[in-house]
Amino acid sequence: MTDTSLAGRKIAILVASGFEEVQMTDAQKALIASGAQTRIVSRENGLVNGWHDNSWGHFFPIDADLTQTLAIDYDALLIPGGARSIAKLLDDPHAKRIAKAFLKGNQPVVAFGDAISLLAITEELAGRTVTGEDTTKEAAEKAGASWSEEEIVVDGMLVTAKGDAQIGAALDALMANVTEYAATLTDEAA
Image 1 (spheres, rainbow, N blue to C red):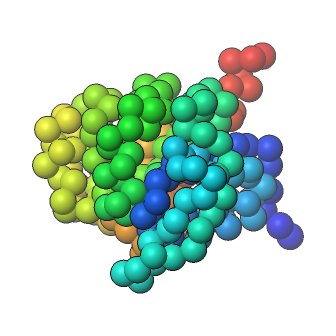
Image 2 (tube, rainbow, N blue to C red; image 1 turned 45 degrees about the horizontal axis):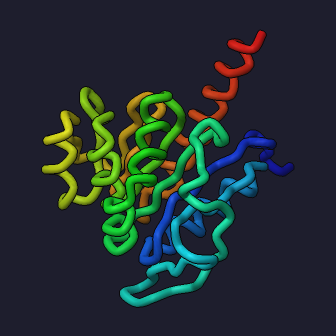
Image 3 (cartoon, one colour; image 1 turned 90 degrees about the vertical axis):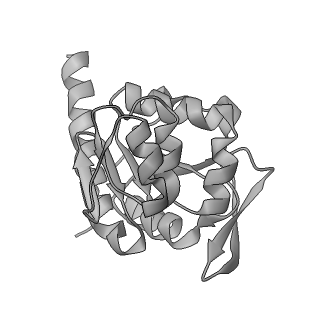
């Protein structure tokens, strides 16, 4: 039997060229298998290039331009790590805007590795507990977050993970959060 627990749910995958390819592709496959609609959101022109095994990986088509993306149009946000990708996103005001909107709206977010530094600039990490690449610890703490050495941390609707080894557990937590978030929307509409 196929898991369709996320049927009809839209998940934004925020990337720039140089993202950790496996963190995006493994997550995307699992989300699609559970019925979700995934959309690759980026400022890149048409295609975005992954990073795989210390070199450039595959190209992926962009589904939505970051400048025209709103958090309200999605049920969750996934941010793969990757130093090159995150460096570009840190310089993009629209990336900050979308990440901030998800966090402020208490919508489900999962961030891997160095993507924590993008969350840190949103001014929405104060009082939250996070984990990620050790290089992001200082930025997270300066933003008011508590740092954990755990491999994965679930803090309400925010899931943070150190890297590739935590993809499955992070997605399980994200899927549970999306289901919970969808239930709150249904309750509010009733």
